[in-house]
Length: 508
Image 1: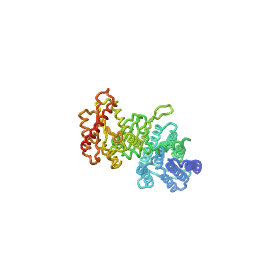
Image 2 (image 1 turned 120 degrees about the vertical axis):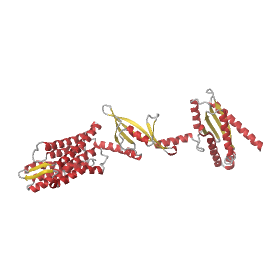
Image 3 (image 1 turned 45 degrees about the vertical axis):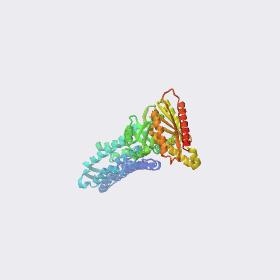
Image 4 (image 1 turned 90 degrees about the vertical axis):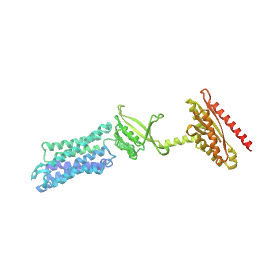
């Protein structure tokens, strides 16, 4: 038996120790290092106490050492699952409550093993008859042994399924890691099944052979190729990039989400692990988002309308196909790019280019653009009203330009209140205003000019006596040119201004 310990147990202990030492010096930066070390420590502990048990001389010491192995054996399957979960999802940690559930049954097994003499749940009959030249024991397994065995196989099967799933969804150059894991699992299961259901070969537990050599495969799964640093860098970029990224397979199911995207979903109270992309968009719409197609880029746009009609958040949805080496599409990368700042800048630029900075109404550029659109769309009848504030020069000379500016702001507000949403009001010069009123006929145009004049009369004091001269013309035939209509409106406006001067001179 001494030779068996020397030539079998010691080499297994040496192999396990070397693997753990190699991992310490070469794999400490790997995300799975801690879980792998825990698994290796459990295997090493089992190897050590197996060797001590086989080398024991006294029966009582042999029984004690045999039972001490159960401090390690129950946790090996859980340690294996933890390794694979961390390898498959390095950016996630198993919540404490789930870890507690995983370790609960193995811990109960440890307690039941050491109290077996009181209930015989783990072993219905156990005794070591002699230790020399080799341990001879009676070991009849009890019901809890089979419960624990079933649990261990369920845990190991779960680990195997995760590895198989990652092999299925991972590109070929990066599958080796999971193949190595599967080889280690298969070797351990094969030797364990020999021990459970077939003849036991020698005094040592056959499972130790499989686990000790399986650790080699698990070790090499931590770093499978020279591209591992590239993969780690790629993963870090994927997780830290500012855009929100979703990876889809060909059926539209979401297979990966980067960290910023998860935080973004949580911010909007949306499921951070949606099953499909369509389901994700549906959840966004349920939370008040609007999705539109942007014809200029071919992208879709998602935005959240905010208070006061202002844009709250805007995101460009860009989709890019993923191709394998055979140039076959295997999935899609969907990126949500935050366009809020750009949209706000564009809107500010648009406001600068189309709004009059003094009065806040449209400027001449917007006025001319509106006329072009009306002409392009053949809108008839089309009424154009020309206006000119009377007495502004006198106000500037008497009260100053600040007072004159305030007069123009009041004038713009009064005209806008009269027109409302039925037309477009613009300041096209120093004291010149213009109105585009689609659909207005003679009667409506006459009523509009009277309303504006009445509004000015009612605010005469605030306007420091300023009035307004108005003239209008209506395009009723497509053959008429807009320039002719505008000139006619200007002529009537100047006629109205001359009439006002005559009336004022008569009063004086």
